[in-house]
Length: 470
Image (cartoon, rainbow, N blue to C red; front, side, top):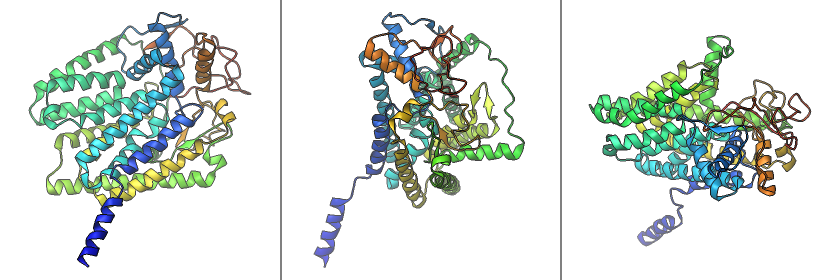
């Protein structure tokens, strides 16, 4: 009996999959969506890839009419710079996919490193949760690659040994990289470093480390033109405001409503839409419950990191306080929510009994959800404009993304690669390294008000896609 029992144990150990198998499989599923779709199905990303191609042409001294480089430091620029450098050595469309695969691969590596460091008893489950809610989250599918790059750097900061995180030079390096990636995540990094410096009486290192990036921030603020006044974005009272915040928390979940010209899940697959909505609500409730229990247990056992905990709570308060629109940014509080949740996940002891089923729910739901992207190729050429509420199931449809928003920019890149002609469409976003004298540009949408290229647009552009708030 002993021999048999021992044999069973050995055999069970031999056939058991490595702990990192589930997050790797999930990352491969996301990679498949990035590679096999006609173009990466990330809402704003085709515009950033287009600007990367223009940047590469500028570096080579080739003509880029009506486009010039910004002459002051810009937070929203590191991803575009990397896309431009990749476009120097690869065709722009290939460079775009390589960039995304590198971003996802780096996210997986950081998730695995943090899992081994913080949750060795349930490392695979922890890494899956990080992929679902941090590295493959709603902003990722919205194509906010600068923000996602900044989140990656913030997460990588926690891989460093605590002693290194207290030194000035690592703070300088990460501070500059995060500053050039995204302003909101840089603010989160400043809060984290500042709180840690105050609590541990390492103020000198914190000040010296943050000063270079803070000086660049001041330069950016002083050099940026003033923003025009924006319309009131009130949500109709405290109840609606709190409901919007709760919805934002639910967006941490794995379900995403991909909308094409024929409609999104609410129109075409209502059962999937409501099942996905329920999954997101259950996932978010489980995540919050797990964090709440972890806070209680960590306080009881006195194992909480006070600096990370306080920094995360400051960010979460900022999330609650910020309005729906600020400085023409939609849902700015979401930019603070995700770093705050990331810090909490790394700061509190998590229950493996909750973490594992949460990872199963999130990982399976996200992987299955991506099958929706296997849609007929002709729909990828038809845009869904950000004002097309009918296609999206009305203004109340939730969790939506518009993969074809910038289809015209991807088509323009393909045309340029095929013919050798310079890309001719104006840029749509003016929040990064490039600026333009051209009027605002939305890709034309067939059969609607957008069915005419605006000034500077190429009549060849397919009635493709456009604008979204990034």
